[in-house]
Length: 272
Image (cartoon, rainbow, N blue to C red; front, side):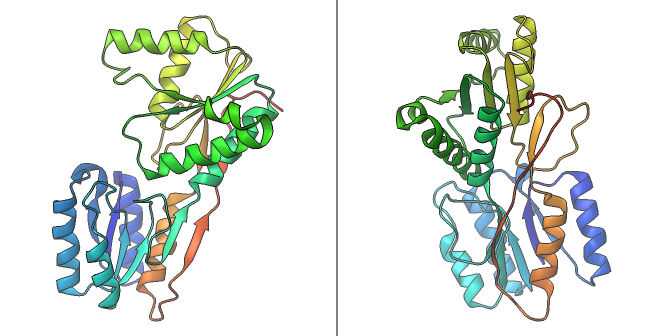
C-alpha cells in the first residue's frame, strides 16, 4: 500500500507498526519533503500503477497540472485509491476519507462568536492550499449566518509573509494585531501564525484571551510542545490507520466519508 502524507517520524513509525501487524508493506511518499511538484508525483503514481499496489492513500498536489488522469487510471486498474487529504476544493472522483475543513471553519467561527469577541476574523495566505480554502469557506458561512454577508466579506485578513524572518513583516503583523477592534477572535490557518500573533499581542500588552482569542488549524497532528492556543484536530493518526485497513481489506468498500473536527482547548479563547 502506498501512502502519501505529511509525515513526521512518529506518524510514520506508528503507521508502519500498524501495517506490519496487518501483514501490509507500506511505500511512503513524504508529502512535505517532496513538495508540490506534479511531475515528481506523477512518476510515483505511475510506478504504483505499474506495480499494481493493493491500495493508495492519496494526498495529491493541487499544483497544475494535477494528476487526475493517473488517478483515474489507477482506479480503473483496480488499485484501491482512497484520498486522505484534499487536493481540490470539490470532492475527488475516487473514494475518500477527508477532514471536514469547511465544518471546522464554521465551528471555529461559532466558538469565537459565542465567546463574545466583537471582532471575529480569519487569516489567509496568498498560497493557501485547498484545505485552508475550505476552512475559510466554512468560517465565512458562519459569519454570514450570524452577522450578515457584508461582515463575511471583510472577515479575512492577509497574513504578512515571512513574519518570522523579516523586521518589516513583524512590524506589519504588530500593526495588524493592534488595529483590530477589541476584543478580537482570530482563526489562524497554521500554528506558526497563531504563535506569532500571540507574541505580537504580548509585546503590545494585549491580554489573551480577554482581549484577543486564537484558534489554530494545524492540518496535521504533529506533536506540539508547550501549546499556547486552542487547536482544531481530526485524530489523523487513527484516521490513517483506519484508511490503511480499508484499502488493504479483501473487500473494497469504497467509502466517501467526512471526518468530524474537534477543538482542543488550551486556554487561548475565553469561556462562552
